[in-house]
Length: 583
Image 1 (tube, rainbow, N blue to C red):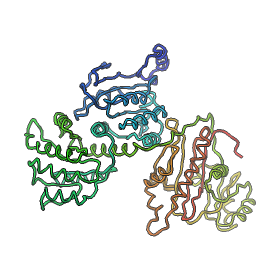
Image 2 (cartoon, rainbow, N blue to C red):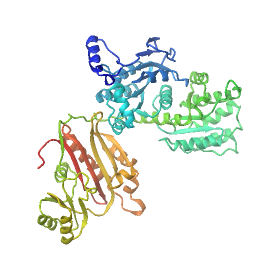
Image 3 (spheres, one colour):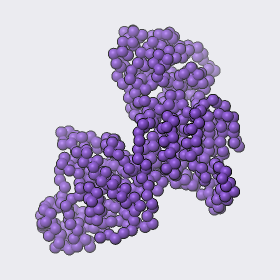
Image 4 (cartoon, one colour):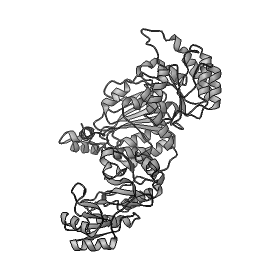
C-alpha cells in the first residue's frame, strides 16, 4: 500500500528500493503492466485488452482505474497499460517518455495524482513534440477531498489545481475531466495525431442534431467556419435546392441510401479550410433492429475522407450507439468512431490544443529553493522593491506621527490615500481611507486610524479597471501567476486565469484576453481603452522580481493594479519573502 497509509510504509518502501539495487522498480502499490504489443503481461488480475500492432499507451496511478479502462468497448486500441503506484524509483513521466519512443505507440494517456518532478514532465512533453505524438491527461485534485485522497493514496503532492492547470497548459498536455473524454481524445490522437486547427465541419440528417452540435460547440474552443463558394457549389449540386446550406449542416434524408450521392455531399463539405469533419450517426441496436440501411454512411464516409485527405469521424450522439464491432470496422476502413457528442467535441478541442503547441518553444519552468522561514514586508518596502524592477507605484511616504502625515500630504499634493500599516487586508480592517481632499479630513482620518506607522500616498484617479496580479510559490508546480479582476471584484467575479512562470509577452496578452474584464480594458461603451502593453510591462516587472528572488519569495500580490488610459499603477502590494530585515 501507499507509504502514507501505514506507519511503516516509508521504511518498507526504502527496504524494497535498497534490495532492488540497479534493477528498475515500477510502483510499489500497483498492479504492474500489460504489454499488448508483444503479448507480455505482468498483471495479477483480469483485463479487457487484446494484442494489437499499434495503439495508445496509458499510465495511471490507480490500478483499479487501469482495469476499468481496459474494459472499454469504444474501439480504442490500447497498446500498453502501466500502473505507476508510488513511483518510488521510476516516475510516471519517465515511463511515458520511454513508451513514446516506441514507434508502435501512437499517443499517451495519463491519470495523474501529483505531477512531482516538473523537469521530468518537461522532458516528457519535449519527447512527445519530437515524436509528433499527443499527450492527454486527467489530473485529479480540483477538490479538497480529491487532494486528501491523493495524499493518502500514493503520497503524491497534488499542489494547487491552478498550478497543475498552468503546468499542463505550458507543456502542451491536454487536460480532461473524465475517462470517456480521455478515451475519445486518445482515439482521435491515435487516428490522426494532433490536429492542425480547431476548425471543423459537421454533417447530420437532422436539424435537431445540427442544432445540438452547434450548441455543444459553444462550450468548447471549436470553430464551425462558414461555407466557402466551392463547398456551397458542391453541396448544392449534391443536395438540390431544398436543403439550407450551413455549417453544421442538416443534409436531410433526401439522398439517404444513395452512397455515392451522400459521398459527393460529404466530399464537398470537407473541401473547406478545416482540420477534420464529423458526421453524426447513431446506429440501431443489432439485437432488435436491422443495421443494413446504415451501410450507405460507411460508403459515403470512405469516399469523402479519401477525396479530401482529411480525418473524418462518425459521431454517435449517444455514446453506446456505436457498438464495438462497428467502431473496429470503421477504423479498418480509415474512419474514426467517436462515442458521444460532448466527448467528441472535447477530443477535437484537445487535439487542436496539442497541435497548436507542437511547434511552440517555452523556457524552462521556474523553480527555486524553499525558504525555511518567511515574513511579510511592509507595503512601503514591497512597493520600493518592486519599483526597482520597473513597476510604477504611487508617490508616497511612510510616517510615524500624525503631524508627519500632514507634512507628507503637503509634499505629495491632495487628494491622498491614508493607510495604517500592519494589515494584510486593509479594507476589511478599516485601515485605509481614499480620496482625502484636504488637511482637515486627513487629520480626522489619522485620528480614527490609530497605528504605529502610516503610509500617505497620492490618489490615483481616472481608473478604467482594477486588476489583481499575484504570484504564489506552489511546492508541487513552481511559481503560479494569477491574473484576475482586482479590487473588491476579485472574489465576487471569480474572473481569473493562471500561468506558470516564466511567462512570455504573448502568453500574457492571451491570458488577459481570457478575462471577462478584457472587454472593459478594450474600451467598453465609449470609455477609453487601457494600454495593454503597459499592463503586460507591469506584470513582467513583477515576474522579474520573482525570478531575481526565486529562492526567497513565497508570494507577491498587487491588488489593485489600477489601470488608467495613461498609466498602470500598483496601488497596493504584498510580498511574503524569506526572513530578512524590513527596512
